[in-house]
Length: 318
Image (tube, rainbow, N blue to C red; front, side):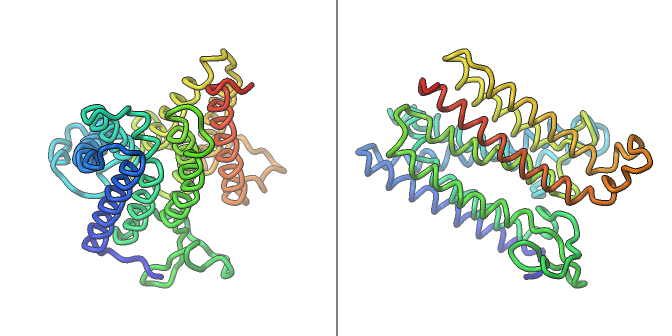
């Protein structure tokens, strides 16, 4: 497939994902003998908070870098690059919880039921990035045997680039597994949502690392993106909440170590620490992409395992 810039395609797919998630959520509410109309309230509140949070996340980032250069023009701009996907997803989840409370449904129960429809929504929203030109595209893929869809996409010149947004979309489908199994295996409300969030957040930090030019860079550093910071904060909230019951902080410590390691390898991949490699270590620079991608994968697996451990501790399983 070839990269395109087709906003109409992106908007239609986003709306399709929005509608599909709302309908599926309604059916899940009805099956649990809860008011299905709450899905409409969740859709409205979720959409509103998603837009507000996604825009606020970007503006908070850009305040430090572009405050006096057209900053306030960006408040009403609907450029896809001026929204935070992670902040938007968090805002939508908050909208589901708030609307559930108003409808007389326990918020964590509602979030458990929304976990699977939310993954479906993320899948279609990520695929929609295929109509936003180069958003969600990673580095160039030169090996001929790797230049295939869905791993890579070509531009009009025939050059292939890592299709990170497709990998993100496919991972959202994988996350349907814990989201759907939770109804049968979880004993505490909210754990299905937490487990699904752990799977999504733990890998999203790595996906952001794969982007050649993350479209939202943090103003605190030049190598950690806003999305990574938001993922880290949300992930740590889940881990801390899970561990505090038994005062077993090992998953939290492991998560912090892995997050710091991810920052180090992002720094390394961006060629910021080349000066520390003395003679004989040139291979570490020559193979930085392969080494970095391997470490990104291992870090993501480690974060998911740490998050899973924190959830088990929350349920009292040592």
